[in-house]
Image (tube, rainbow, N blue to C red; front, top):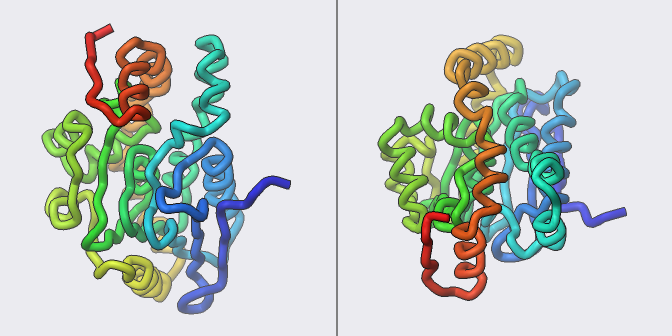
Length: 269
């Protein structure tokens, strides 16, 4: 039996309609290894037949929501030796995790302390609402690593922030999006004092859970279907783009520079 990184607590809030999902790797960056992503995907899917839960709150640990994909993970190193077809198959876990959270009928709320970076940001924008601690930030570093932003997150960010802000957030890969900026851009809906993001998220969850469950679910599904009607069309190639960009010299240089803590030199090949 492997290590469990995800715990689920149900039966909270009004009429027991709130559930809390906690993702904690037990360290300061809370990275998304393939196994962690499988556990988070399965956690979301565990609510498919749950008629009692109206709201699900997802949080990381006290220091980080998540620093994103773990570049030092052993599974990642094994994937680099695979062929294109095998890589495409192995890289579906991130998109499937985000899609599982986006497709939930329950209202979902992210409580974010510390930071949400890369895949952590992709996961956060897959939920309905985000509560960000005032000292926390977002960052989308994929382009600085020679990769495209994948996991279906571009259409989701576009819905929240509009085209110019989405391009700014993704293209200026090394620039932090601080809490007040994230609120002004529409990337998050609520700010909280440091250490209180979960409290604010649970308060919001309780307010939602006090409403009639069935019309709440119907409203969420209707809004998401209308707002995301073109999401599959817009992002159907991002897995292939990600797979191809990770095979470029620029991607190898970006990752190497990150590991070696130096400035990368990209050459467009």
